[in-house]
Structure formats: structure tokens, C-alpha cells
Length: 508
Image: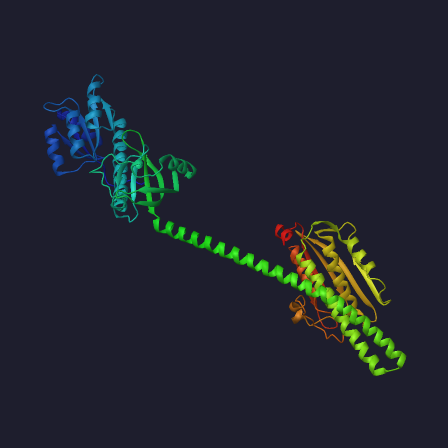
């Protein structure tokens, strides 16, 4: 503890000059000693000088030591007071404690070592009190100048002191309303106490909501932080309560809540309208596609009939025209079938389960039917590999990817299609890799769009819906898909399935 380095100034009062001389001789090297033969002389000296420690004998003519120290306490309270008395003067000690507020008493005859220690301890008390007073003065300056309201309140909720900002907020002054307490202002004290208990952190209650009734009829929304700072004279806990007016913020919050509520209602209405429009559009698209299929099949049959008749008549021009019609109608039927599959998949909810992916891949390969002799399949999947997915949807994905891989490898002398699986932390990764014609890597983001094609129709048939269907199914699973490739270097389509099915996917 840091103490002052100045010499301790001691005033010793005794009506016996021999005692004064002995005291000065014993302690003059250690302290700055001043003596007085009477209480009157001591008081006169104190009027002109200051002392850190005042020591008085009890039995003196005209004024006892207890009476003298009582005067010192009232006029020079910073001086620490000690009483010298005999063993029989117990009442004098009691009076000195009650009236003079002495720090300690020393019995006669005093021991120099013990008395020296008592003086040093008394001076330490003096220094600590001075430090406390300086800190209190600084706090007082902050308390008075603070722009935030501060209330000093005891444990019973009674207001002990208000700073200027608190007086302005509460429109109260303790000099005119000394019995003001928390119940005077708080709208619901029991609820406030419950909130205080929930927000307690040690000896501090932080950021507690409270609504205060202000004289005049209006209320103020506040946040309070109460901190235990000590005890009052009656032993009750004293709290410093910082009050922050958040009325404007509360009003802004209410305004934002209303805006959000209105926005949620508008979004709900618009979402409903959009869903209805999408349902109508889906129904319309499905109906159109379904109704187109029958006349297109009729046209295809009639084109076949025309081609047969042209062959019988050996009319090459008519046969060529009928074959063109047949080819165009076949493409339209294929497109309509893809659109119907896309519509059905878009409206169907995914049913998630553990799915053996190796078995599913083998089943898809076997269902492809006859394939070119120069085509080889490589299955790089562990026998016990599973994914969390809808088996029927995954089968659609694999059929589309395998059909594409077969189509784009048919120009190769030896076509190779690899199907693989790996487990990576919280997801499963599938891939279908081929050594076909590949594609330009800068266009890979276009692959999964509806009607997006990277190769001419004359070279490779297709509608541009297959990979869009793959992308839609992967989104239903909460997964992703992407492609890697290069011209004449083949292509790889990757599918990432999460290990835990997402709830939104179930409802999509």
C-alpha cells in the first residue's frame, strides 16, 4: 500500500510536563512531535497547525481527554485520535469512543515500542482516509456531472441520493420528498424484483427493463444497472443505480415490429399468390405437355405410314419428307416426356431413407439395355455404401447422367464410364465420369439450366432438360451438383448429398 513519505506529525497533550518531556525524548527521532500542557493550548495550536495523530491524556484539569478529543473530532475530523488512560478508567474509554471517535486507547504506563506501533497504525488510517476522501471526491464529481441519471438506493428501495440528471428525469428532489422510494415510480415492483433476480451477476444487476411512472402522468422506459457499493448507517446494502432512458429506442422497436408484421403479412399474401400462380402454371404446363403427346404420337404413326407408302411407290422425295417429319415429331415427343418428368419431379416431395448406392447404380446400368460393345462401366463403390436420399429420385438422376455419358462417349474407340462414391465428413459424394467429348470449362455453369445445351443438336440429340432435372432433384435433397471437364478430355458430374436430410427438403 502506497503511503506518504512525510514525517508523521503528532500532537501529544498532557498536564504533566515530565510526561511531555519523556514522550518527546522517546519519539523525536521517529516523528514530528508537538506537545501541549492543556487541552486549551492544544486547541489553540490546532487552530494554526495540522496534526496527523492527536494523543491525549484522560485526566487533565479543566477538560478531560475524552471531551478534548470530542472537540477535535468535530473540528478536525481527519486527525486520528488516541487516548492515554489507566486501567480503572473504563468509563473514560467508553466516553472517548462514543464522543471522540478514538482509533485506540493506550494504558499507562505506556510501552515505547507499543506506542510507536500504535502511532504508525493511526497514521496509516489517516492516509487511507485521505485516499478514500480523494476517491469519494472524484466519484462525487462524476456523480454530479454525469449526463445519465444515477440514484443511490438502499436495499429496501429507498432513494438516498439523486444526481442532477436523475432529478430531471424523475422530477423529484429528496429535499422536498425525503421518503421517495422505488415503489413510487416502478409500475410493477414484484415483476421488477423477478427481473432483477434473473439479471444478477455477482453483486451487480445488469440491464434490467423497468417502466417508470413520472409525475404528470407519462411513463418512461428505462434500462437500469444496480451495483452494490457498501452499507448505510443502519447496515442496509447501498446500491448505485445507473438509469438509461430507452423510451425512444422502445418506440423505434415497436415501429419496426409493426413494419415487420405488416411486411410479413404482405409477404404471406404475395407468397400465397405466387404459389397459386406456380401451381396454375404447373398444372397448365402439365396439361399442355400431356395433351400434346397424343396428337404427336398420331403424327409420328402417320409419318411412318407415309414413309412406307413412299417406299412402295419408290418416291424418294416423299420418303425423305416423311422421315424428316418422323424425326422432328420424335424429338417433340422426347421433349414432352422430359417436360412431364420435370413437372412430376418438381411437385413430388422427397421421401428420405438410407439407400444402398452401389446396388442402385448396378440396377440403373442393367436397365439401360444393350449398349455399344466398345463401352465399359467401372463401379468404384464400396458394397456397404449408403446415402440418405429418395431412391426413386436418385434413380432418375443416375439414368440421366448415364444416358448423357453413353451419348457423349459413342465417338470414342473405347468408352469408359466410372461411377464412384466417397464419404466426406457430413456428406456423401457421388460422381459419374466419362472419357467422352467433354465441354469448355468456362461454360460449366450453363449445364444445369433448362434448355441449355453445349453441343449442336445435329451432333448429339437431347432437349436440355436432363441436367436441369438433376439440379432440381439435388436441391430437393438439400445437396448440390456441379461439373468438371474439358474439350476432348471427358466430363465428370459430381453430386453431394448431406448425411442428414434437411427438413425444408421434405416439404419442398
